[in-house]
Length: 482
Ligand code: ME8
Image 1 (cartoon, helix red, strand yellow):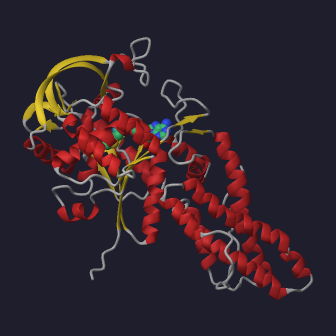
Image 2 (cartoon, helix red, strand yellow; image 1 turned 135 degrees about the horizontal axis):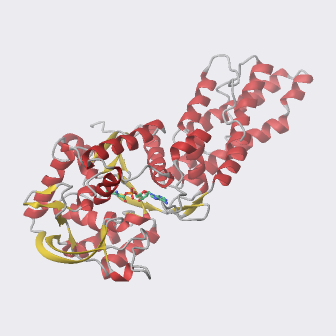
Image 3 (cartoon, rainbow, N blue to C red; image 1 turned 180 degrees about the horizontal axis):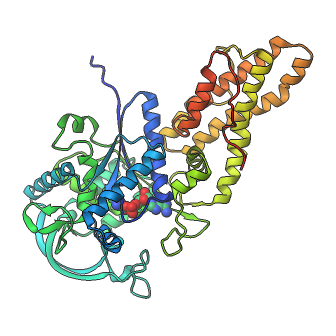
């Protein structure tokens, strides 16, 4: 028998670099990071891909505003994005840029396969294009001022000859795949939206733009740039070595989970699988589209200037607290709201009071009453189930997973309150104190284990404290009150 390890391949969208990362981008990224860490902890050979979407007209316009040459601008911005994630402790395995030679090569090869299949044809496009969305939009999608409702800008009227991808050829196969594999598009609400789009609205889409100077050239017609979405989706292949590192590619493709926001389901759940079918490649196992969140009830937008910067937030709160808050507060998949007030409330209640205080107090008493020593192997009925925590993570119910772990935190706090080691100390019941604190110790050890994917830094701090030979409390509280 071959000893083959499980593999796990997870992706986030590659973000546009025409601005800085905000809390929405951080959200998808934190979820992906949590899953990647969970699978590494489980022993799976894990690959977590992130990157930047750089061949976009949006980026050209943003560069123009700064007076920089677009190549210089995207280089600078790509490093801002990459550094941001690194500084926030995001554990990606590869950061793919769509301006890299490796990506371009993969795109050209992929395009050729689709072309050879007969799925590309020249046609004339006349319609409206919104650069903000990077997509063609219809009159009916515009608001009362004739502007794109998301970007508050009039779309450009375009009439040009370009090349189309035969998306409609794959209509039946797409519907059949979605029907046979309910896990392919999640959650169910999104699946229903996609099915209705595929059945009733889906059309062939233009995959090239004439007169676009920035972007990957169409191998069969140099005058055209490849449409940015056709190019961007292929990062999920180029990032794991498509046509350049076959061993790696075969190991990780198809992806286990592709995380996206609900804004980009059409591209990921219709265009993308059809492109893969055309190229003869298997489809990702799951595309999960989470909800959008507002900030204090308002849509995050440049004009309102209310975008929350994760880097600024990480100066106020340990980033683990931000991770905890987002995963605990918003049931994954749903829309939600980000509010600094809620963050502060949860921080003080769940982290400073419940968890931080427990660690401080328990270790303090172990130090004071037991000379830093407990029975680390004591067998007890656990007040929460590590297995349940895992099952919830596997079914992407992160809030439930945290709630389960918190049963352990609450139990330990209450147990200490009820057992009152300080009184046992007064009455000289040393054996009893040791038993009480040993129980708390083993629960804490399991808590640290289950928190590892969610709050890696905190979990490591607790594990370190619990692994010293002579136990003692941390020199500073894990979560100072705010
Ligand atoms: O669409 N709430 O990039 P993008 C939750 N380059 N998540 C949010 C959010 C919010 N308010 N705002 C953004 C693109 N997001 C393309 C992707 S992939 C081949 C190409 C997150 O920079 C969410 O994941 O506009 C959303 O799908 C993504 O950022 C859009 O990022």
